[in-house]
Length: 144
Image (tube, rainbow, N blue to C red; front, side, top):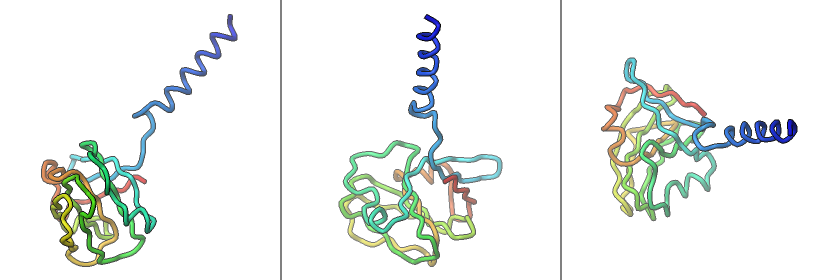
């Protein structure tokens, strides 16, 4: 009986370690004074991941998004081809500050251009940045 009980404890601990929400994944934190707003992100750092982005998805959890890490300063534009979720995008410089935030409409093929060179872009549900008071100049911390 002791062996069975010990096995159940080990199994319970193992299950808890892999339960949703128990393991912290990659995130981007936006720092506004003493307030921090965190967005859980998927990372797109390979060309095929960047090209696909959030295409062909029906929804995105409220505090989730996608981080595009170009590995260097770029001036790449974005569009919403095959993307049905309305999004906002924050362009972030290598210095860790938001350069600009733009709104993007579903399926719009118009390119959304950055204000100049940037290192990262973060897509979130449309309005998330505004709801959380995030503007150009906001400091960003990557937890990846």
